[in-house]
Image (cartoon, rainbow, N blue to C red):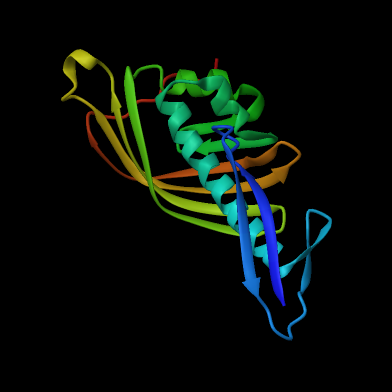
Length: 190
């Protein structure tokens, strides 16, 4: 028996979409069914959904860095679930304050570059945990690009599938090392 299935994959950040068709030959094996988001799906659909979920969560994580570096604070805040928060070494920020606070934290720096690597994603139904490494450069003044605050560490996050796609529920940042000039976050408590 040959099984052919087509899926529409949509990148929620770019809005681009494409149709992917998967054909597999199965002889004498019944499709197994699983539940995802309250829907019964076959093994093939489950595997494709897992890949789509991983891609969406990966894009969510990268959107965190991209929006911070481009200073798009409204888009940065929209990455979070309504009950989401970020726990930084210098304080906690709730979703309701995220756009204002994130801008204030990085306000002392004209440019930043946040690089993520070693991204690990574990999905359990409609929730996920992620861990990834961070190396970030913070440049206070473009006229003096040699003076910058460098941070290395990792993020431990939780995410949740919502009606609007995957959202960040919690961000926990751990600093492991720093270099260059001291990193001093802007006042975000006002």
